[in-house]
Amino acid sequence: MAEEHRCQAPEGHRLCVNKCGFLGSPATMNLCSKCYRDFRLKEQQQASSAKSSISTSPSSSSTAVESVSQVPLLTLPEVKGVPPVVSAKSP
Image 1: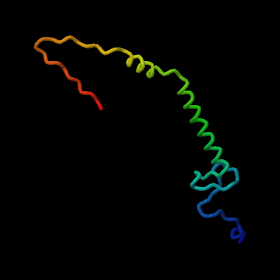
Image 2 (image 1 turned 45 degrees about the vertical axis):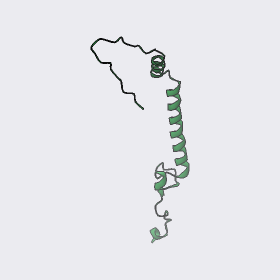
Image 3 (image 1 turned 180 degrees about the vertical axis):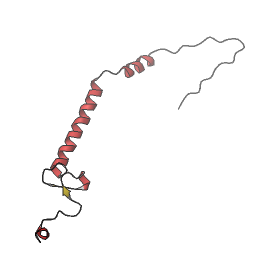
Image 4 (image 1 turned 135 degrees about the horizontal axis):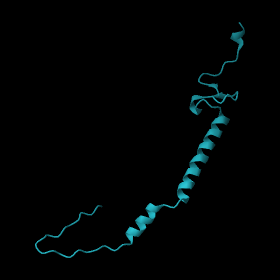
């Protein structure tokens, strides 16, 4: 009979998986609103720190592209009896 009077969580809600005592929901990965907010902030901080470390590190590929674009194109001399090679340009 004591079990009949226990408080029931609303359907679809369970205790927060961080065991903080609040209710979580499937929409927030079974975290309560505070734990979910903290989780999202931590994710965003990790993502922004990863992006900043990538953007601040020197990129050798961009330097290579810049140096290649500055190299003048060479024209090969024509060879008698050999038709000229026509390269297809991409759009």
